[in-house]
Image (tube, rainbow, N blue to C red; front, side, top):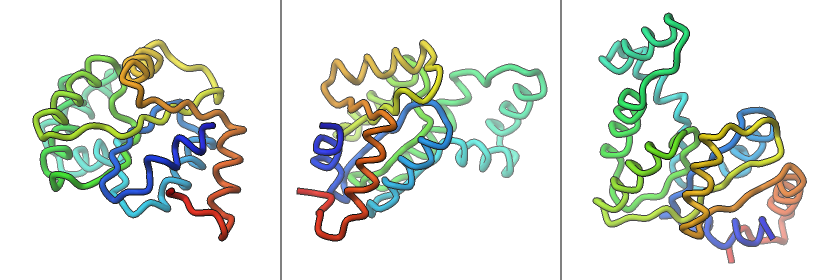
Length: 173
């Protein structure tokens, strides 16, 4: 089921996909599968590193939080995401991993999409790969209520990779 639902929405250069779940080997495999799509791939961790490298105000705030052993505030994380979101070409697709991380960020992200007349096509939640935190579950439930959540377990991921590697199988309908 997961592969047919995922394949039905990822075939377009305008697909807008968010990936949530616990980082690790399975997440890397899922992201590698999604790299076959000809759309922008954005790792939120790369956006954070760019802010640090460029010594922006957000980068300084991220460094300070790390030095103090705390998570950066939602305000800082949203500022980093906002910079990427509003600089991208309207109507173009993307795969975004690592944002939103909590319900407040998901609500802000939806407001941005609505302001541009866009919607998410799919939120892929990689499950069964370790301890999932309450914030990730709240984000998953939020997008599940919008009927755009696809939960993918490691076994589903094995099938996705095998299917996408088979030359006679089209990834999109």
